[in-house]
Image (cartoon, rainbow, N blue to C red; front, side, top):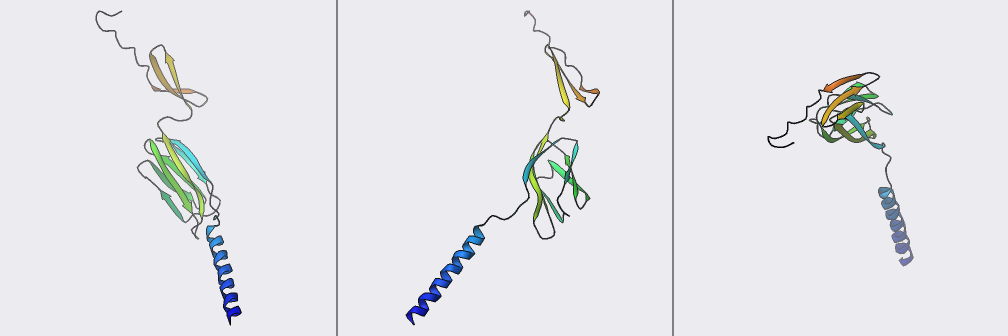
Length: 143
C-alpha cells in the first residue's frame, strides 16, 4: 500500500512540474516596435493576418482606421506616445508597439540663417512651413 501511495505521489509531482513548466513557457506574440508618425500625418501598418480587434492606448494622441482586415492606418493627432495592438479572432497579437507622434515630419528641414530659422517640408521640392523669424531688436543702449 505504501508503494502505491508513493507511486501516486510521484506521478502527481511530475504532472504538477509539467503543468508549471508549460505555464512558464513564453507564448508566441507579435513583434513589438516603435511606429513614428508626425502630428497631422498618417502611416500604414501591414498585418500578418486578419485583424479582429484594434486597441489604442490614448486615442487623443493617435487614431487608427481599418483599411481592410490586413492593413491599418495610424493618424497622428497630437505630440505624445501611446500604444497600439491588433489581435486576430483567437486573441493572438498580430502587431503592436509604441506609437510616437512627433511635431515634424521626417522630411522636414530647418534652415538657420544667423538667428533666423525657417522650417521646410522637402520631398524632391521644398515648401516653407514657417517663415523666417527676424532677429529680435537689441534693447536701447545695447549694440
